[in-house]
Length: 434
Image (cartoon, rainbow, N blue to C red; front, side):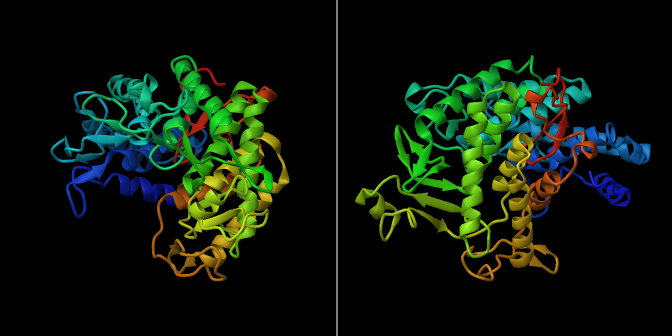
């Protein structure tokens, strides 16, 4: 995407050398993580090199090598679906094409594979890949038992591998569930005819979230949080992964022409912006809690000293793990509004990351967003730092005419010919653009 031909060639040369049947330090890989990170990036590279970046003129043998390795990894990942219900297990032995013996998976782990496997099927012409993902998805599109669906479209977080039945009533838009909801919408964008029912399921979840889940902090009615639920009870905690939902609502609103969805997503984006501005480092913590009113029950549960507008919201998990979700939502907010504040917030976050997270060899997660120096460095950097954090910061500043893969606002008559995966890998859509 930066049009750095030397770097692209180095990456393609390296990909050609990988033996996916071997795992350093073990024998198994995680189906979910390898799919969204490694596999998704290869699919995206294939689309980009055969689309808007074909002019980069990488040697044919390297492009052919990418295709070969992409298919090889797809075949290995397909082994994870060999279960009675089609719900995949998450650990795959790459040499034996076997799985672990886990009894459950998360709805994110089982329901966030449809984009990548659909793309492989459309590139290769072999339906076998997408049919594996669709079979797993069907259990979540038609969830059972009803007692684990507390509100229409909103599910518990875990699913039984043997039957495809849900196992609990505890859910959220965050960890264990997030990209399941995300991909309901994005599957429709990828192929609006084939995945029209997925959009309807997403609308159901979105409507229930606005009606039953959305929460506003005492003293800050303009701030919107998404608590996790346990049955019909809400817990006023939001993890950092949940902030992606703001962008997802905005995207859904732009695609369907629904201003209510856009406004709801913008309120989440603005809440994230406000919270980043309240910490010493200018970065957001891993967990945030809040009170809805002055009920002492909230104070006891969330360890608040008093109940008023200044401390009704607290960062209770002070680590910053270099996660992208708030910045991702600002990107979608900017695409919908062109409001410069989202650019400014993204730039401020970039400066803060460089100030407190940068090391001699990359960037490190930190222990305390309210310490001047970020506290201790955790000596850890995930792949999403470059795949998402830096990419979304770059994209929010990139002019439309330089980025055909930008998210488009359908309300303006422009159509989306690309869709970003959950790791921000752009895929070329297969159906009529929406």
